Image (cartoon, rainbow over all chains, first blue to last red; front, side):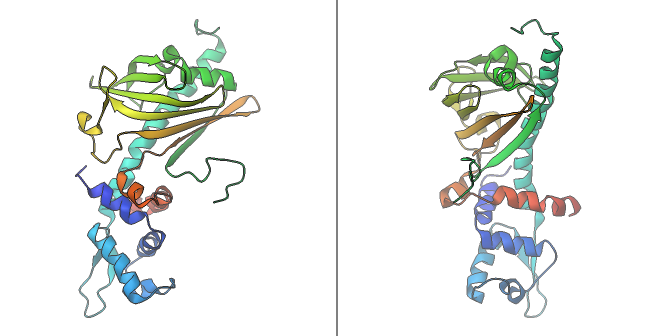
Length: 114
Length: 166
């Protein structure tokens, strides 16, 4: 994983407004006005959050006339999800074997059982 | 924050839970006796050829995980809290073969891994079964610095379906 990318991604995700913006963009492109609608926030306020998301590479802006629609960029999110996934994999693998081991123990075919 | 009776419910980080069809004492021993830990610890495809446990507060759990390619990854945990057979709290780190704490980069992993992360394991007795919950606060440093790490894991969960399509 490239240095700092995950850091920027998780920092961007640490804010509930930014998470809501990303969740909205997951269903399709939107203008800044559309993104501002559900929030009790000024356009500059929303723009500030968008800048953080853009810097983290999570959002890109289109070039359609003046609207410059916002788009979700999935790659850094996938990287963050991969990180979480590697953690899950550790525990899924461990738990699968623990399950087998406990079953074995209870069948009584393990000499260690005291 | 109010989270009912579970003192850990609102804690940030990742949580993994599984119910095992075995009595709690047995599950707890599988977690705290080295010969038993070696039988199951580690991700799929890994073995655990070495494990030592000093089960007391301040004591160390040291283990070596070996990948299918034969690469060794050492790790250690310092017991912060032990409530037999209910609860374990460990400060987990990567380590070298001597048990010294090392950065994740020592093993070529992301520098975003924290040097130490707190892992809480709870063992809950069900009828003849045991629910094990592992909570880990080992998240990258950005959200830590912000003091608002909560929520990102849920966010990623929520986006998993989207990412599968993207």
